[in-house]
Length: 258
Image (cartoon, rainbow, N blue to C red; front, side, top):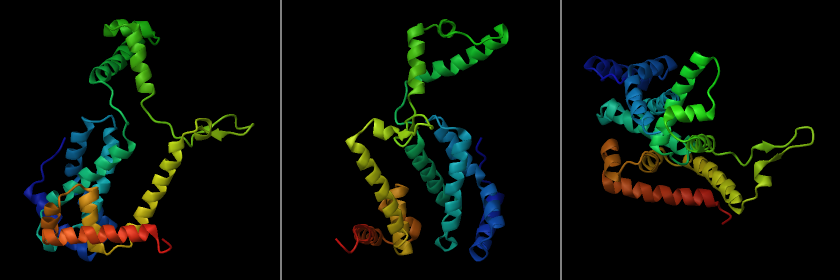
C-alpha cells in the first residue's frame, strides 16, 4: 500500500537531489528511488485495478519513470519532487500498458468467473486429488458448460501473436506466421516500426530544452500551460518550441535527399 511522503523523506530527498546534481552516482540515485518508492506503489496500485498486468511488472516500469524524473529534476525551478515525478511514473506505466497490454477488454463478469474458477479448481484438486472437468467447474460456477468454454477460449485468444512467430518443423525448415497469413497491412506495420526508430534517433538530435518540451507534451500528455509552469517559461515559448521541434523532426526524418 502507498505510504505518504513524510516531511522527513522530503527533506532527505531534497538533500540527496542536491548531492546528485553535483555527484551523479548510482548509490545516491538508488537511495532516492528507495526513498520515493511509495510514489511508484501508489501509481501501480491505481493501474493494477484497471488492467490485467502483473503488479510487480507495473512497479518495475514505474521505477523507470521515477529514475527518469530523478535524472531530469532541476532544483532551481522550485518544484516539489513528488509533483514532478508522478507524471513521469504515470506516463511510463501508461505507455507500457499501451504497448504491452491486451488489445481488448473482456467482460468484467467473465474476469470474475475466471478468478472464481481458479479457486474452485484448487479446492476440487485438494478434495478429490484430481483436476475438475469443464462440466464440474461450470456447475460450481452455476453457469452452462458452453459459457465456461467460451470464457476459456476468450482468455486463450486475448494475447496477440507476432507475425514473426516461427511456424513449422525445424528439420524441414520453418517459416513465419506472417508468410502463412499474408496481410497487406503487415508491411505498413513494419514501416511504422521503422518510423518509430527514426523518430527516436531524430529526437536525440534536438536541442535539450526543445526535446524536453516535446516529451512533456506528446509523451506525458501535459498541456502547454503545465509545461510552461514546470519549466518556468511562458506558454508562448512552449508553443514556439513545439512548432520548431516538430519542424526539425520532419526535416531530420525526411532527410536532405527529399
